[in-house]
Amino acid sequence: MIENQQAYIAPYILALDVGTSSTRALLFDARGQGVTGIGSQKKYQLTTSHNGEASLDADILTEIVAATIDEVLHQMGTRASEVKAVALDTFWHSLVGVDAQNKALTPVITWEDTRPASMVQTLGEHLDEQKVHQRVGARFHASYWPAKLTWLAREQKEVYGRVTQWISYGEYLHRVLLGKSVCSLSMASGTGMLNIRERAWDSELVQYLGIKDGQLPQLGDYKDGITGLTDAYQQRWPQLQKVTWFPALGDGAVANVGSGATTLGCWALTMGTSSAIRAIVEPEQVVPSMGLWLYLVDRKRAVVGGALSQGGNVLAWLRDTLGLEDLKQAEQLAQAVEPDGHGLTILPFISGERSLGWQGSRRMTIAGLSLHTTPGMLLRAGIESLAYQLKQVYDELHRVLPFEEQHVPQVICNGGAVLGMPLMQRILADTLGAPIYPSRDSEASSRGAALLALEALGLIEDITKVKPNLGESKRPDAKLGSIYQQGLARQQKLYHMLQEPL
Image (cartoon, rainbow, N blue to C red; front, side, top):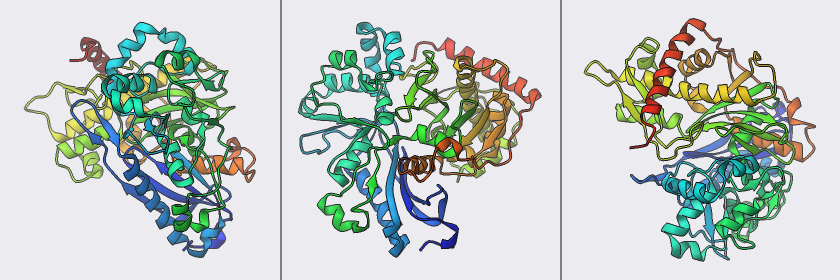
């Protein structure tokens, strides 16, 4: 049941957040305030292999999402009838091939899957990457659809030939639950195939890839909701039969909204499984450099920034490899090591590289190991290596955004890997040379999806007028910043020494 019901204002938004390692169902009231005591989270693991696979079974994942909805509706009891809409955000860049009956013919190929990296060179030989980037806001890379589709056509010809339509996981979920779907401009922009300026599928890429009419999904905006459930789910959730289900949005876009980073001078730094720094802009306001990307939040708002394929996944790998119980223990060991006091240089590309170099075939490299190296040193070096990568994104974003060079943005951090680790926040502040403000809204993506749903319903006027709920900032220390600059210089030297992946 909803605790302290007088603290919340109906109607409610049920927010679904489908991430790379877990899915959540949370409840928000009519002001975008999270409802305490209501929620469900379920974890899962990607199917991985030595050749770079990182996928999920579409139907198993859908049942896991459905189970979180079951739990939230049960927790709400009779108040479940006060749910007005269901908001959804999912990981960007996923690809699922379906047949004419909307049955999945492929797994969910996630952004972390590096098998299509071998197709990037092929794309570059036939298309002008710089011109494509200017139109779609994305490079040729294993995480995007052009490389994925080229790889599938070559490596899985039989399955590829049977696919009726290519969709993202958010659309697949809606087709199973609702029998139909709309592909939001936000989700489409994360495929690397949407012409950002025209808000339409890019004609050159469609022609080059040989995509037939109807093989790409119907486009819509975040307000284009759907009502009605398939028979099986109508029986399972009669409370949701008449509510509006809004199209899936990219998790990065809604993380900005949910943390309050909705203006040009306020950036979001997210670190969950992966990491990113993003700023919301008008789509025509910025042309991203080749190291950055530009995706849409909706028809009138875009996010410009850069993303790493690593973040919490590197920390989790170090924790597990070193046999530690949890990240709290890991943080304590790392805290005992002086800044850059380990003699190590790490390229943290455990899932390949995205921003700024976009070499998906790169792999994690640790240089400087010795008999003196301790688990704490490895952990400290791993944390610092992530900060160095984000510093490069921060500097590039600062270069392309239209404000004074000396301007220092307000950087709001969100995501479990950074909010749960104060040491990470301090190292980021010192490395970036900017104050870091932790968001008190720990579920920024879910809250952002809920706020956009409330805006679509007319229950709030404008997401930019919702004030962020921030914790005490971590202020940069210039002396420590100069130490980390030396570590960053070593990382860049190692990066260029290993310019060609092994």
